[in-house]
Length: 495
Image 1 (cartoon, rainbow, N blue to C red):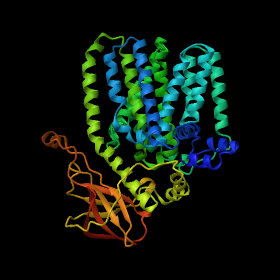
Image 2: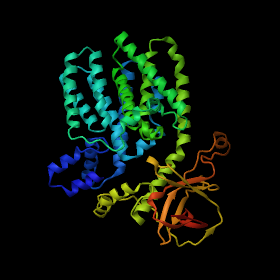
Image 3: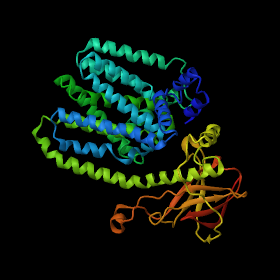
Image 4: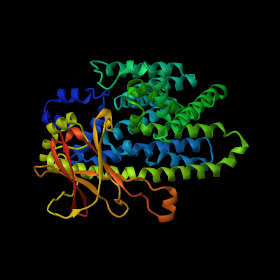
């Protein structure tokens, strides 16, 4: 959005627009996401985030059909393909699917890498040149796109196309050299700190790959990460021994994902495994490509037919459980966007964004909204004219380092609220009468209680508020639902 703002400010200065397009942002030259965002603005007349998210997620559908094509070419039973749809389309990577920049970076770079590698499997100058173009697009979509050089060269060498490997390498290396001209490293990249703790470094790689299982149970993610590496290694040996190149691009994509895990671990493992939540689209592709390679490896055995039903049932139950677990998180995300729309339109800042980012958005959000370059969706307003009081009791306390990168938070627990009946929000009113809204996050019901009652959420909910964004003063708590506010007797004072 800031890129669109700057382009509008410098519309007649093409050189300045070009420099901004390829400028570094948090260690990435995100030229392709910027151009996509700007094209959507030019076509629709506004920054339509729904279109941004749709385009990014269509790339996942593109990967889906590419993998389907490999099943058809290899004459694998399409029953083995059913689990691919279960593994690929699921809510584990909800953050990548709903956060516009993650959609345009992470989902799109994986698609571009897969297309580039697929084109390398076809002989001919046109396919080679087109593959280079897609590789360059991947490089300027996300920083880890640089890693396409390694699987691309390996794929061509496996096919004994040495001249093509040299030509392709030159094209990609030129793009990489240009990438690092006037490159500035971001403040969150600390390679030395990551290398000083090699155990954490390796652990992070495994969790990155296996995070499709769970981030709450790290050992499970580590175990799945080990299995994925094992399948990759066996497939590598099989390719060398059998010279079977049908699934080379799939193996190449998994190689790219493993290298991406290493790169992210090198720059971010010092933060802790919790940050891998924003990279779970990679974990989803890792487990999916590992599954495809596993099926390719067992294709020559007659007993594979006995695995069709167990694999379909197993992955079907798995994805059902994932939806059950993640549905409260998705609902919370929706409510969070509603609440933050209210907070910005009524107070001029976001509650879940730190002060530096609030100050940054304050520079261009008002301009975009005023010029109707960005239109907030229709939203509710938080009224305070209803003076109804409630004797509900809530619990609240400081939680240091609860928020991303160590921001202190205020966690407010409302034990007897029922999100199955209606969506409720925590409302805060300061001494000057300003209203702030925070969503209440419900928890999944136990499977036993769900089967017995049919209710998705257990009773209770909590709101997490980034403390630094709130001005000092006394705040009155209230509960907001169905356009009514019920004020509570409890208050909180920020010193």
